[in-house]
Image (cartoon, rainbow over all chains, first blue to last red; front, side):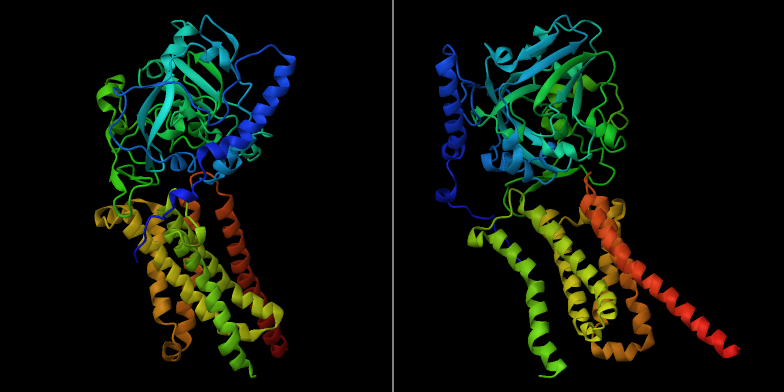
Length: 315
Length: 212
């Protein structure tokens, strides 16, 4: 039996502008209403609105990125259901503005900050990264964001800050998947402080030059390209500096299957499946499976972080 | 129209067509016909949908006996072979998609998967166990095997358990759907246990009465 990649004529694809226009209309109507009452302020960017950024070739892989509809139509975001296509259908219930982020723990700066203020003056860059899911599929994604380190240094972590802990929004009305106890909500992820400060570690606000679609973790998400995708926590509302290792969602749920480190490693299999190879989403039939690279191909930049560690034990 | 004619001309063609619908729907999605699509990862979709259809048909096959007994429609038995053979076909299709489209004919990985991944080991075992049942499904084989035919075909209980277990074990975290399958299977197998016990009791009662 021979199968072809399903063909979608370009004319059949809803232009992104049209797809998001309803949202913009609504946002525009609201803004118009608000502007009648308030002094003129810069309107917050709507989902899919274009961003200003520069391309960072130094940190980009040379591979062809996946299509937007693949990156925004195939998501693990259990807050919006466990099917891959469920977040793209239901994540519109998430309100990404106004959005605030609380900072706590072992740092000099604490408090709750409006996302708009946090992003003010931050230079956005585009980086094309490989994305490897723990389920053995992969993508190449043109993220728009900024190094996490530029944000963390502003909070002045103290010498007691050994880890950084991130928390997703908890609001079952906006995130109906949280009504089902599949994971312990809210989702928590964490990094060691040196991992968090690594120049490859990215805070993401956009995709394909536009404001991040909700299903990809709007308005603020983490991307750590040498780790499995579940480390890249979405829709972040809390950032904390801790002295002890954070209790991360998947690690708490199934500690023998999902470690705290979760570095991409073809040598260390998931207990139930092999991690030696992966299937690239969108690749032609019979040419999609490829070997998985140590640290997802970023070994040269990050392997030194784990020198002397037994990566089978600290998987 | 006699009962046999009704089955031959109406019911069997209807069931046959219904059993083909999933594969037709998947083919439409794979080729993009009628605007259907299988999403960003068509290979996984084909693999999972064929597997799930196989399980659905296997459970339907197991439902024939309880339904015919409870509704007093013994002739439903005439549909069971077709359901069973379609279940087997979808299992073979599921495995072929896994081997050809997912593993891309990498037989080394196939061997490693079967040996090292328990959920693949039990899935593959279920596939192997289905082969003798499919081969002995003809009228001639039924006659030739006589009483042994039924003993052999009781393997389907083991196969169904392995199939549902295979589904349960490959799910990452959200086990709600495989648990529904497990529940239905438990009812279907539990029915048979209860019925066997009731038969033994009534038999014991009648022999007891005869002894007195």
